[in-house]
Image (cartoon, rainbow, N blue to C red; front, top):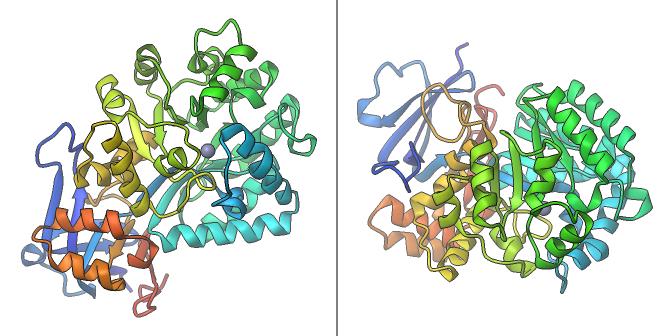
Length: 438
Ligand SMILES: [Zn+2]
């Protein structure tokens, strides 16, 4: 049996960066996407399709189809503490994040949380993510297993942390190195999974551990490097104190060989010009986490500056400091954060940051990020009518990009009717789910 499925819907996706290229956002009112064996074969107006007789037709007319959303920075162990009251970064870590991460010492609990997390990603239309686990090696194993089971494109790694946190959450440079290496051998490149060397941030790793992370990065040039950078003023002062010889926070990572292609730094709120240029020159990326930055009062991301410097940037939820796993909500909050900095984020820009731009930031844009033929079939079907107000508001819009903007302002997981993950359909109304034999 051939596995050819034709999806009918309105379509919005980015062919390029809308900030740099006119016509980057492709909008197709009566569109269709043809999927075969997990890959996109063709996309365009339905009227131009031919030779689709053998395909199963799934009619989502009236819904908006966008590429699978990509979350560039999120902590699955922190689902337990999302929406915890009242702290800034360093106290928030002590009071909420570390106690939550301690619970994952229990592998059974870690597995439960990993299952919840990946199911929530799919419910929110997120098909790729770069994810923090905890210091426990099994916390990465159970997450990779859960992602493999649903065929998500997921990158993660065990946290490297040998100081500045509760004793039970610490490893050692030798143990962190050995466990990371074993996890890379076990998971990196398996299905759609990838490994990220994951030092939590400069303050929670000794120089010896940062050195061992750099060694891993040299030994495995195609794995990712995932950490935090310049989120909060107190954090930055503490890093300056801990590394008095370093000219900047970023320079600490650079010194240990952690600034390179496939390095993804969450936040990047308080960087100087020189740091931005270094990131761009080395091909490193920034993860923009608007709900987290607002929630912890950390600061406002400067997208204009990143663009000018040429730093690849993707959008991220940063749950649990972030307040929603919904990338739609995150797009809406990104708009507001940039507005406070006198910048305007168009719906096309927002979509780019959550799809193709994020894919470029993670270096996975050859596989995902838009609906070009040949890419993996990751996409989302959005239904404004899932809530009455959004449905009413969308009925007043004239164009598809207006509709997209309303959905990123009012939308959340309720408006995600279905998510297609590598060609496999997860429809919340079950009408079509698994109809392609997945
Ligand atoms: Zn984070």
